[in-house]
Image (cartoon, rainbow, N blue to C red; front, side):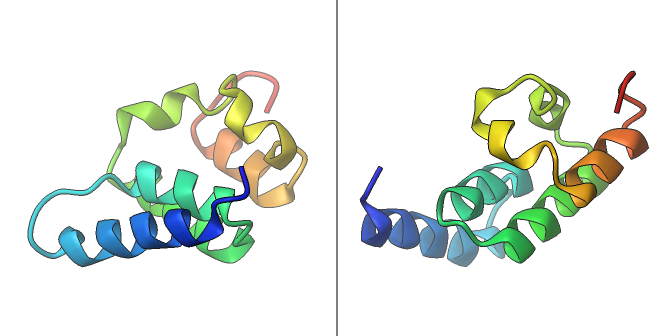
Length: 86
Protein backbone atom coordinates (compact mmCIF):
# COMPACT_ATOMS: atom_id res chain seq x y z
CA UNK A 1 0.00 0.00 0.00
CA UNK A 2 2.97 2.26 -0.51
CA UNK A 3 4.24 2.12 3.07
CA UNK A 4 7.37 0.09 2.43
CA UNK A 5 9.32 1.58 5.35
CA UNK A 6 6.53 0.64 7.77
CA UNK A 7 6.31 -2.87 6.35
CA UNK A 8 10.06 -3.30 6.58
CA UNK A 9 9.96 -2.15 10.22
CA UNK A 10 7.21 -4.69 10.95
CA UNK A 11 9.27 -7.43 9.31
CA UNK A 12 12.38 -6.53 11.30
CA UNK A 13 10.33 -6.51 14.51
CA UNK A 14 8.91 -9.96 13.77
CA UNK A 15 12.34 -11.34 12.98
CA UNK A 16 13.94 -9.88 16.11
CA UNK A 17 11.21 -11.29 18.37
CA UNK A 18 11.34 -14.74 16.77
CA UNK A 19 14.24 -15.84 18.97
CA UNK A 20 12.43 -14.72 22.13
CA UNK A 21 8.93 -16.06 21.52
CA UNK A 22 6.84 -17.81 18.91
CA UNK A 23 6.33 -15.72 15.82
CA UNK A 24 4.39 -17.27 12.96
CA UNK A 25 6.42 -18.03 9.88
CA UNK A 26 3.19 -17.54 7.94
CA UNK A 27 2.87 -13.98 9.23
CA UNK A 28 6.45 -13.26 8.25
CA UNK A 29 5.74 -14.71 4.79
CA UNK A 30 2.80 -12.32 4.37
CA UNK A 31 4.96 -9.31 5.18
CA UNK A 32 7.77 -10.54 2.92
CA UNK A 33 5.22 -11.02 0.13
CA UNK A 34 3.98 -7.48 0.63
CA UNK A 35 7.54 -6.28 0.21
CA UNK A 36 7.86 -8.31 -2.99
CA UNK A 37 10.72 -10.46 -1.71
CA UNK A 38 9.94 -13.73 -3.52
CA UNK A 39 12.81 -15.80 -2.11
CA UNK A 40 12.10 -14.77 1.48
CA UNK A 41 8.38 -15.30 0.98
CA UNK A 42 8.82 -18.85 -0.22
CA UNK A 43 11.39 -19.61 2.47
CA UNK A 44 8.94 -18.46 5.13
CA UNK A 45 6.05 -20.34 3.51
CA UNK A 46 8.20 -23.46 3.63
CA UNK A 47 8.94 -22.75 7.30
CA UNK A 48 5.20 -22.31 7.91
CA UNK A 49 4.63 -25.69 6.30
CA UNK A 50 7.26 -27.27 8.54
CA UNK A 51 5.74 -25.73 11.68
CA UNK A 52 2.26 -26.78 10.49
CA UNK A 53 0.92 -23.25 10.66
CA UNK A 54 -2.87 -23.39 10.67
CA UNK A 55 -3.23 -20.23 8.56
CA UNK A 56 -1.29 -21.87 5.75
CA UNK A 57 -4.38 -23.95 5.01
CA UNK A 58 -6.17 -20.76 3.89
CA UNK A 59 -3.50 -19.82 1.36
CA UNK A 60 -5.28 -21.63 -1.47
CA UNK A 61 -8.19 -19.17 -1.23
CA UNK A 62 -6.71 -16.15 0.58
CA UNK A 63 -6.76 -13.23 -1.89
CA UNK A 64 -3.38 -12.00 -0.61
CA UNK A 65 -1.83 -14.90 -2.52
CA UNK A 66 -3.67 -14.32 -5.83
CA UNK A 67 -0.60 -13.05 -7.65
CA UNK A 68 1.56 -15.85 -6.22
CA UNK A 69 -0.56 -18.88 -7.14
CA UNK A 70 0.93 -19.38 -10.61
CA UNK A 71 4.47 -19.57 -9.24
CA UNK A 72 5.91 -23.09 -9.42
CA UNK A 73 7.08 -22.89 -5.80
CA UNK A 74 3.57 -21.98 -4.65
CA UNK A 75 2.02 -24.83 -6.65
CA UNK A 76 4.60 -27.21 -5.19
CA UNK A 77 3.70 -26.08 -1.67
CA UNK A 78 0.01 -26.66 -2.40
CA UNK A 79 0.87 -30.11 -3.77
CA UNK A 80 2.79 -30.95 -0.59
CA UNK A 81 -0.23 -29.85 1.42
CA UNK A 82 -2.30 -32.19 -0.77
CA UNK A 83 -4.80 -29.56 -1.89
CA UNK A 84 -7.03 -30.91 -4.64
CA UNK A 85 -6.31 -29.29 -7.98
CA UNK A 86 -2.91 -27.98 -6.91
